[in-house]
Length: 452
Image 1 (cartoon, rainbow, N blue to C red):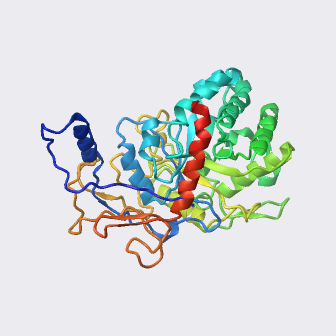
Image 2: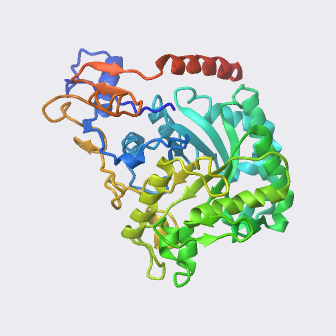
Image 3: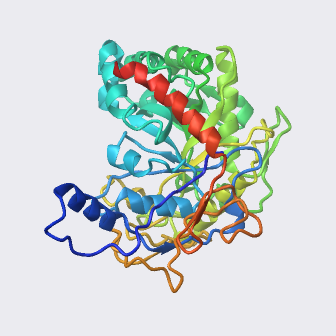
């Protein structure tokens, strides 16, 4: 696992720029002031580590808001969560640049509005890759592109016809850059692609979607790309709170439910939903199996009066239990040996999202960086404002520790393999440095083909 949230500190930077300095030096000094952050490592509960089975926590980083902090601050919050995978709904250059060298794996999004154009114009796909992927790799790890969002459950027939051709065009554009082994092309679906979902073994895709879904599955299998599903047990509880067991949807102790056809037992709804998708994929009879990832799931901490269960307490239980489940590397009952990759929705409350109040309260954090509720994670301690105007000190030691090293943050005890940067200790502990350097050189050589 490549895991690093690397921040730099420039000690004793002056707060005024002498007139004798060259313009270039003035700009460098100003940039140093902007990036100087004074912080302490976030305290993370032990359960939020890397899963033994290989899965790590992913977080959706939405930005439908007018009050969010800059990407540099988001990096600190993601580090506090031990999140090493980030999903965007676009390819925001500010975010991708801010995470350069972080080691976080990014999934970026191609907006719905571009899907029809890329489906009919391969040169548009190549231009999109040149503008949105190549400028950022290998410094920022981009591992997947989602083409549209929940396209197959929309009512635009042009979009339905365009989805797979657009995905194929993007894949060809990446192939021209020798990047198909690095960047997967996929798309996210809602559970509404299913005609039924319980018991899981009875699930199937909606009949009218099969002409689109079957060749799409074949593409995913051929290109070794994951099938993404947006799964929200909250919606099931909200729709029928009198008959849906709250503990069952919150990963709490409960009697669970059984699938009579398979004999499998489910103690939480999310796993049942994922296995329903698995059964539907098998019934589509398209060929090789594909990995299933949960591209969105979460629980709102607030809602309208008619939105049952939207409380901070329930949100904390859902996401806290989900994080522990991911950290344990557990698979679903139908695939217990396959660690389930999950992306929590979302990093921030987003105040400009339309719809009911719950839509604006899925965030793990408020825009000011404080937790929306307690999932056992403390916000990073910062000096100054979100703009990073610190004073160059951290308590009395003057050190900046941004991640745990092989022996923990202090060099002793259990660690996570992260870098440690400490101005006080004046040393950098590197983890698998040469492997990362070699991968960087290979990617630069490969991506250079597209610039010529």
